Length: 94
Image (cartoon, helix red, strand yellow):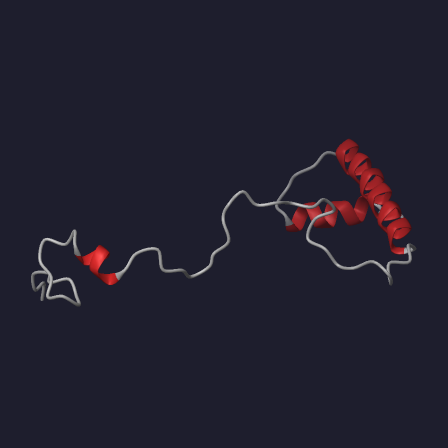
């Protein structure tokens, strides 16, 4: 797909960029190459390809986020400065 320097100038104007004629022609050629490459990619048959976030497999070093009970209520309350056997007792704020 060809991009003309006038089209690049229009996009540059919308982006409030002031480009010289040399740059307009340079970017027109580069944008045309990019669009040609995108057209080639569009010709590929990807019907059997499963959508993915990344082409490589990532493994996380973090543990799974699973709810579990590591401590009993009594163990947690044992370090509280004040408790009533079931809950922490804290000073009233409001």
